[in-house]
Image 1 (cartoon, helix red, strand yellow):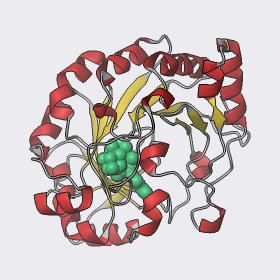
Image 2 (tube, protein in one colour):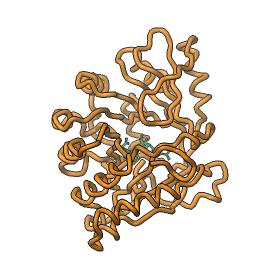
Image 3 (cartoon, rainbow, N blue to C red):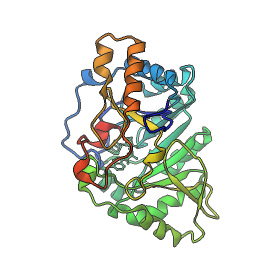
Amino acid sequence: MKDGYGREINYLRISLTDRCNLRCRYCMPDGITPVEHCQILTYEEILRVAECAVSLGITRFKLTGGEPLVRRDCPQLAAKLKALPGVEQVTLTTNGILLPLHLDELAKAGLDGVNVSIDALCPERYSAITGWRGETPDWEELLRRCVKQSWNTKVNVVLQQENRTEWALLARLAERLPVDVRFIELMPLGYGGKCDSVGAEKALEELKQFWPDLHPVQEHRGNGPARYFAAQGLRGRIGLIDAVSHKFCANCNRVRLTSTGWLKPCLCYEEGTDLRALLRSGCDNRMLTAAIAEAISRKPAAHCFEQRSQITEHKTMSQIGG
Ligand code: SAM
Ligand code: SF4
């Protein structure tokens, strides 16, 4: 359906949990109390919301979190979402740590694509950014397995001073594999507002030292707002997700469902609709659909990252569902 500004909203990001096995410093550092299980939507509740969303023209779902793979039976939910009549695409955003374990089940579920967040390839730097103390997967092997499933495979890298020396190494993954490597500007949400950010143009400038012919391409490569660049020798693309320096709200196509059932029309603002309360009050699907439609129609025109005092969302990204 169209929102109040005429934008077609066809994409819902569903957060399965606020919990995570990592502690990325800009998202969920140590010391955050997780939400109680009873406050988290059940899979049945999520499926009801999805069914109603489909009836409004939302045909693409992204499973996110927190870390979606720490919630039990995530692949089963993916399969059920994929089986809903009218659903075109179900994809997943993950930090990848548990992906080797669940990859086959996700493939069986009919997953269409995966975004793997890797902020550094160097284990020490990865650990410093994410707090992970265990072994990391063999990233290249993992991405190769994803590509083998014919998944639309992307790597997400949050731009930070701390991983600056890794940008080219990460971009090189797109040389060896047909994966897109996307560099994301840190948004001033939650702990992101307390960390040093680096602009995407800076990253582009540095990457051009390695791929001087890096040039923009007008390609639609997913549901997101990334700007893509190609260069000779790159099998995938380099992407920039520069929500802070380039406002792309005019083309926004998404809404978000937090793990507690709060339907959020825009990342920047706390405003939204409490679908959990509705679901648990015994509403029927007609009422649920009307509530979703109402929230979409009230989607704000744009975020306000440039005027931080106007940001009304104070949750962490892991609680919002990034
Ligand atoms: N745990 C999964 C992961 O890391 O991919 C899914 C949830 S995570 C919140 C989704 C994406 O949001 C990740 O790529 C993460 O790096 C990114 N992210 C988290 N906080 C952010 C922030 N403040 N600004 C920009 N991106 C952020
Ligand atoms: Fe966990 Fe993803 Fe947040 Fe990192 S970015 S703490 S992996 S939810």
